[in-house]
Image (tube, rainbow, N blue to C red):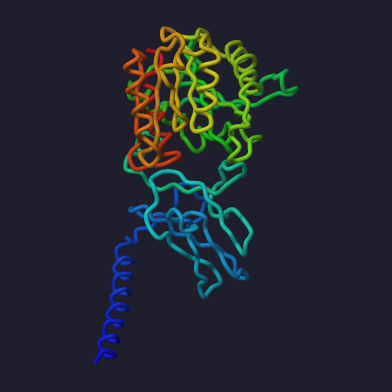
Length: 371
């Protein structure tokens, strides 16, 4: 009798587990569409309306294929071999909204997915995927006047070479004579000066805000923060001095000489994401005579004791994702306010240390600048 009851219980457990798994599978909507950052004509990777991602890799001779994206702590998504020799798989659950880097592991080797465009991150060109966001309208490509993002090469005596920056100029800049404020905007560790335009859509965010009449136009300057020389996990070894020299003594004078800028500290801002925020904090505190607006996007906080002369600071913006450590940002904001410092905090709901957090943060921050 006990054996029979055990058999019944085992059958119930197994079939129940199968039914649960099937129920989970049946909840995935089969409305998958190609990711918006796929290579032209490529169907995979695909995403659905729930945020699941589906991958297809052609590797008929491979023994194992895994995609680095997937639910946290599970080692990504294992793909299964199909009859035609391709490998396919779907993430175990929905991904956070917005942009994600990823790569493909084939038999232990790391490769990019040939179906997607490549984006510089993690100190290498990575594959990218875009999970549709409920609020993606603010960075959508719309039928509005567009600004320009142009590459400039500026002389850098301190590094013995010319260095690259990208400059966003607002719609109509090339036809006018008006002078503009400038935001110096920094990328994160392992990225470069292309990140804010390619992954962050900073130019589209600006175009849409200007078209909606929510901000007055200004320039954005994005340059390489010399961050990749620091190994991951070795942040304490980073020295701000070389980049501070490039930014303050070389790039800013070049921009003021070659673009129509309002070249005063009250019309100059600096902000950055992640390690770019750390750079921002150090430079703004070292050079309070250069910038009046500060922004740390998942890049730490300021304490009241950091601000030696609060009359020199027009506004501080602090942000992070709700899956980071928002209590630290909120606490810092409360303390700065109590000290009489003008500060705004923002928490991106449902996101972590990722570009959707920083897109939203930029969107929230720029209307506060140059008031």
